[in-house]
Length: 202
Image (cartoon, rainbow, N blue to C red):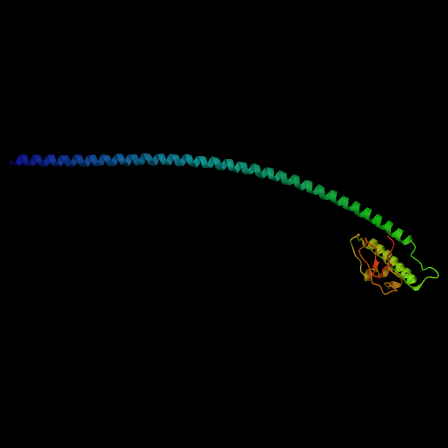
């Protein structure tokens, strides 16, 4: 084999190897370009998504500002209406208190003008004790009315014996002559005695 042929074979092999490397280099270049193109596409998509998010965020903020404004206006309106209702309620309470005081005053005057039951002549002891007890209950009722009027109480309030002493004769709480026990009760009800028949007329 001649040296010339050997050298020519080596050149051919070198050329083939060079072609293979160039092909591989071009393939890597195409891959790199493809990746670059995909990366650029991804960047464009991300930018579009970001712009959309910003637009949505601006719209959401505008909606929130509008909603806050509506809520503020509604709160102002409700506050005004609440103040008006409070003012009207205060006026109604004042009118009711004035009317209640007038009614209570009329009741006191009516109670004070009603004569207390008086023992009659030639009564048996039981009837006499009953009449005394009824007179005591009447005194308690008058004292309750005076206590309510002077202290601004209502029909649901209940005084104690100590509360009524200054409105009773001799500042003493009366005692049933038959040994009964008195129940003062609230302003809206009459006092009672535990002895049967010892009952104030309604």
